[in-house]
Length: 420
Image (cartoon, rainbow, N blue to C red; front, side):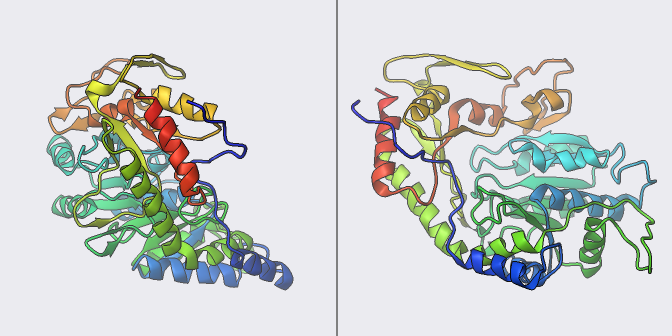
């Protein structure tokens, strides 16, 4: 194929700036509000809550900080305030999304909890409600669920919420990738008892960093604000009665986020156009794009696909490397990603499921059929391991909203060539 590498790298998803961001950052500089208080922080909290259809938002340094405080709030509500040396979930099992980034569940471990991973639904690539029901049969005492929404394509978070309510469990919604997406008209980020959104550099809108905790409870919002500023008590000196954190968003970062929010719908429309061009350009190939669940309006943050099983060439992965054997008419994620890289294009594998990660291999993993965890020091696949199958056959495509149609057409041709 006579295609030259792109002179300028095509990224997976890079920030798209508009100009208003600099105005608000300059305002912070001009007024000397450069720390973690100021009009930008106040406005981000107001806008974030309003956009997510929630009553309160707490602006924090990153989405992981937001998730950590979500977990801490849930743990203390369920089990009371822990001793200083213990986390709020000490020794408690927590049901967590399996196919996600580790930041979704690491805060559970920060607070002493024990993640139990729930398999992925093939129809949505998100937490499987049927597997969650099975998990409650096996672990009826669990009172907390942490559910992530993958790549901006929501699953049945409404069913997840209903199941949690039926079992008396709280739900933490990790909407880091799904800001602006909806299910049955309801905003992602508004289903959880506590929710978190992200402004990381690659997200649908960005502050370079940052995130928000979302809640409908004013006491919880105020508690999160207190914890995020080192849990200082209302006293004339630095008085501390509980552990705190340096988690507050700066007024400078908030200026960037504030300037990005008016462009959220614009970014979603651009990402949708990228997805639709891939869908059209890759039709008739043995692949399946991100599934769109009935009743959902994705934000189309990252376009991805899985290759049909009978179109996969041989591929082997260990914990750090991947190898494949080229075969006419067939391909695999490793070949596609390596080929894209040759042309200066960034793609990535699908999230590797948590139950396959060295850190978490000994943790329980629940499928629709029940327990999928072999008591061994190595991962042994189970028959119905949906997340592992999607990871094996899937890859994320460059989804930058600044990519031109002409550039995307070339990328489509590169991908098609891998199937020759």
